[in-house]
Image (cartoon, rainbow, N blue to C red; front, side):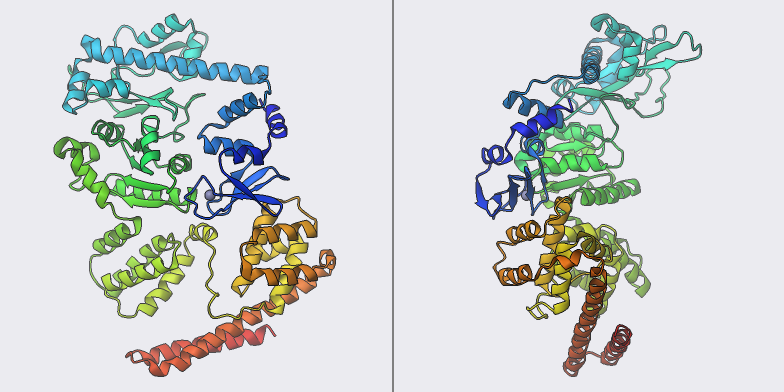
Length: 619
Ligand SMILES: [Zn+2]
């Protein structure tokens, strides 16, 4: 199928295709439109006719025609290829290999669907499944739900260990090896010449696991108390092994039934167990999926974010220690998959799970928990401070370390600042300045912080700094536009520019250079930069100044010297500005009424000395 992709790309015009879905208007060399992948108020999606790509500068979605089609229509990559090939009249010639692969996949799905029907039939009709039916009715599961979720029972005949295997072989005319390949049977290799195949699941409550589109691709199987012996076999849950159609951690249980509501309500609820999801759906709360008791994976997090515009995700895990840890890990996974996610925490109190709550107190009780679910950060403040054993300085400091991590997830500086105020009040910390300083240090140590920042560029120098660019900044921008390896050096050394304007330009240049690694022509690159910053009126003058002074000398090896000289001058500039700020603070100390004035003065004076030394060093 791989040779089809270039054909599609040749036939399709990305501007034409996207403008059928989103109105586009011309903007320089590109087109601009309202991005359909996030709540966009002013256009932030660029479509480039020459490069045949689109990119949203707000939510970072981007790619080629296929990517747009699959994101917009929520289709898989393969489905998108088929759609577009059909649209542009490109015959879908499968290679022999991919044809065999797709036959293998569709056969495996067929076997699983047949098995699911078989298990349901056994559950509802067989004498043997009596204890399984009793178990379900005690859990309040209705027959309608059994059909909807394809619950079932796998028979356990002591004489015949291959009841399902025989049934499938007979119905679909397949071999033992094919059943084994699909993941439905186990194999005993005691005699390598004559392997014995038998059903993987026997005597268990069966739960059909389906993909996003509703195809049965695996099973979860719960152990039941044996009515004869009174014992419950172990493990409690047994799942399908990985197969051509199923990879553990790749899907979310219940997503096929939940995805419409998730989209409509623009929110998804993640629970731990199959039965938590099933009960909630049965009670009419249908935007619920389960992560099947394992740690939430990156792929699952992306699946969730894909179906909600505002990425509002409720985590509802157990309240025990393991549940807290799972919540913790899930938060990090989601923040890594999508920094803009709005995570809320649902806690069912009293050591119960959602299934217990719904059964005992009804759907309303859970609905109330959803409505009252705190934002991740409010929840963590209360949890971490609530767990503190005493109010000693050491305990307070430990709380701050823990809270700093969550604080760094917040993109909004005002929000961050407000929360610091709340933390100071809750922990009864009088010196808010010290708290801010400490949090700043701790936040820098959080590995996820950088991603969050990348999504929301900081403008912290905006206020106190001059609007004109320093000569060193102008020189560095100039060198970085012309010479890509100098830009890479600039970024990898972690340099930043001082003025907000210069920093915006270097950020835009970084985007352009990494989207188009091939782009080498200075004029084209500069035009891209202008296009990208066309809405920033305040930059137009600075940009045209820079445009005039671009020189190809910057490509020569001697540019390295110019570069390191400019970096040195820039660092001096920064130190001088910092020194100014410290001096201002020292001058402002006379108005300072606090009792720790001397201590603050000492700290500032110490800082001042250090800055002066550093300045001396880089002369
Ligand atoms: Zn967007």
